[in-house]
Length: 222
Image 1 (cartoon, one colour):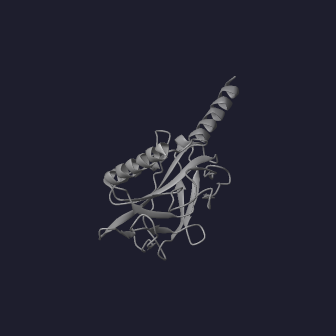
Image 2 (spheres, one colour; image 1 turned 90 degrees about the vertical axis):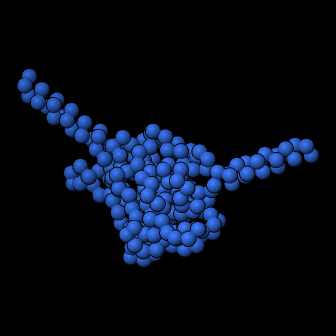
Image 3 (cartoon, one colour; image 1 turned 180 degrees about the horizontal axis):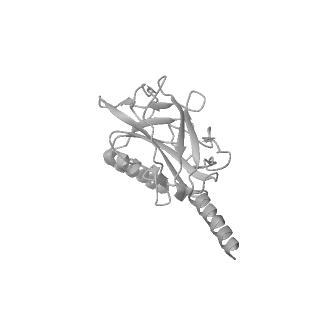
């Protein structure tokens, strides 16, 4: 009876550990995977992010803003939608503890960086939904960056390319032997670079909406 109780306790502990363990992903920004770049007009790429820790991104009105690249994960299968043209990170999405701001050894490049996913997104070694975003300034979250009106970027945008959220495998650091970080998915189905661009002013967004509505009414009258 005592042996059975001990065995049950060991199994329960192991299962609990695997349930709340965190997976690891390997992030790289490169010429092949996609560089970190910036745009001054929101339409064309002006150049790669300058080297530095953090990288200081040139801003449209002059000056620079400190770069932050962040990683948001959610349970596998969670659909990421847009709100006002930007990713809508609901409570299902959690920002990873690590962020990247250092660009080295050349402009636009970020060397191999392990990213630990949130345990709320899935156990270690399991697939999660992943989205990579970036911003300039002192905001501590993507939503804060959007609200402050700085430069932002996200995979799946017209400038950055790639996918708006995708299923990403993770490594299990608690396995025996320990699993290594799984490379981030790249290309049209994943990460394809980030291009920091100005957040449109609310008046610009409103005028764009009015223009679209007027065009629709004109077509209907014809």
